[in-house]
Length: 416
Image 1: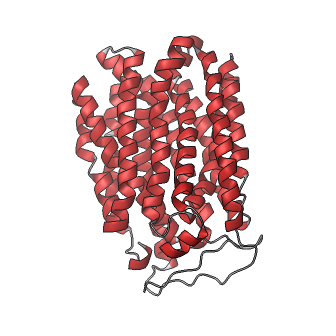
Image 2: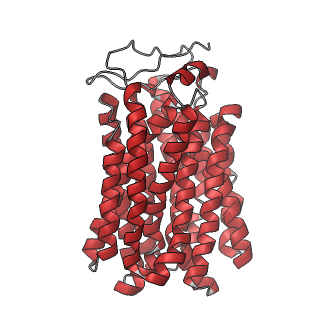
Image 3: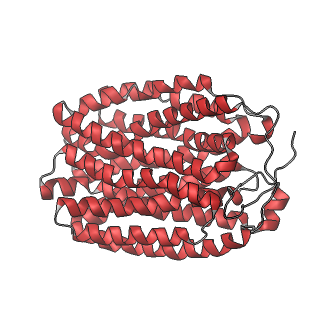
């Protein structure tokens, strides 16, 4: 039951399999925790730059007289690029791992930030956002593979460490925007290209660690566990996981893109104060994302998925009717609970289809970005025709989709 599966990267024509390893084997392979820290730090830098885009929306809206639908289109341009290309990148790296692609992809983010700082036309802003999305598309599938290789068999923990960097980076965007971009204007975005340059250096060093891990010879095919779910149940489970990620990510996207405007419109707070409130929510997301993975390792990912999505429902239903302080408290509870499911959903999907690890990682990271982008555009249109408050009343019911978790199969013990 506990027999390990060989860790292998396949030949140029076969899928790359990142399989289960024992802690001893992981220790012999390299400095796992150093690599985990490095890839998490890179995720922090990557998502800090990504979140900066949403954080400067009020500046762009005022400067170029944009409506909410146009704001949503900026998010769509950024996230649709990542959504479209991540599965493609993951499928390609399943066949041929690219240890230095992370550093090269980060160069796209570097140039995207420079372009955004100098953009004076709406179309140029869309192109700049798309370039940052391209960097994200290259980054996520292969970096998730590296995190698993460095996990020592603790896949949920490794995914949580990886997610922690990204979630904390996302929470830093509003703070940096409040401290730097709001006082100094759009041109100050160029300063953040130095973050992209630092990320390029870190990722190049990680690529040097990753390259020797790739075996250039074909290895035996991983045999399915006799108690593993059938291919039909796997397909149903993947669809359910996508739906669960939809409910989680669309709700988070609604807060990330429009929470600032909601607080300004309803409570009359300043832009800088609203960005601090957004930081509080996103910081709670970061903590929840870190806690969820180890809980999934210990108690089972299906249980964590159940609790983290449905558990947020009472708080999301209360948020549209709360005062300013209560809204901040509720946003913390929502962030802690709902974000704890991310690692469990991704690892659950990876374990369902282990021979397509890169593609599955790309699809789920891509779906997360794509749902956020599409949802932001739709919610922007809805807000223009109704109100921001109505948008949050509708989104409050999204966690109820968590009931679909009943259709998830039970995985064999050794892959949980």
